[in-house]
Image (cartoon, rainbow, N blue to C red; front, side, top):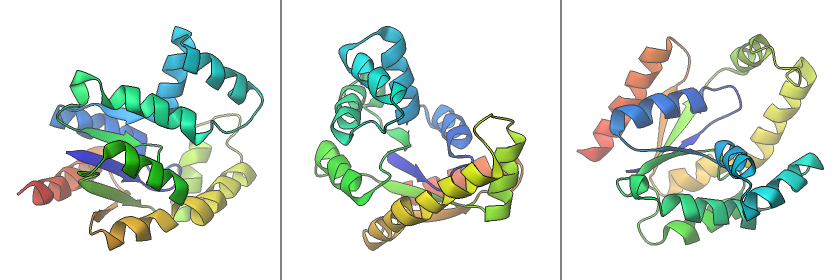
Length: 184
């Protein structure tokens, strides 16, 4: 199954993607992790990404798509994957559609978490760049650019919303339950 985890920053997508991917025996494909991996290995794409990120800019879609294309071609992704961190804009949806081809995504799990809870979670991580102001800004960017993707995927009949609040294990079981319902 090709599954996308979509939700605001701090919703637990990365944590849950690791856990669910492990349970399903498929890889968790995180664009952020891919960037760091290519940079650490010194690949041609990694060198380009490192220079872009050092300048504080976003990695262009064509580089991200090229990395995803390489990653999707790996044997461990033959049975499916959990994708996290891409797409974040409507333009990236089109890029992902072109990359995946006719079959496309099978499911989009949408994480629902109260905004105050998100802020609290991110502040508790203790990261230097996680201030109340920067967190609220990131949430605003999410609402403007990424949240509209929920409508795109809903129109395709792909979305299932999961309550992202609660014990990590409980949230994992909720996600596995909606995946199981889709597989039947």
